[in-house]
Image (cartoon, rainbow, N blue to C red; front, side, top):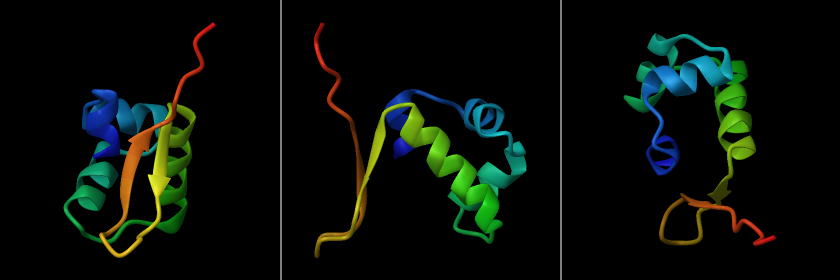
Length: 70
């Protein structure tokens, strides 16, 4: 969801997070990924404006940060 909210392809996320495309694909398929790779992807998505919402009874989710109007 986070990647889709940004309009990024798997290649975009892999490049921005400095991980392999196969790593992104495995993670999104629910397969094992290294903790360091997951941390890189999360940090990259957060830097791009994604907020991760903790599970609150309805499941975890994501949303975009509000961007201040200047």
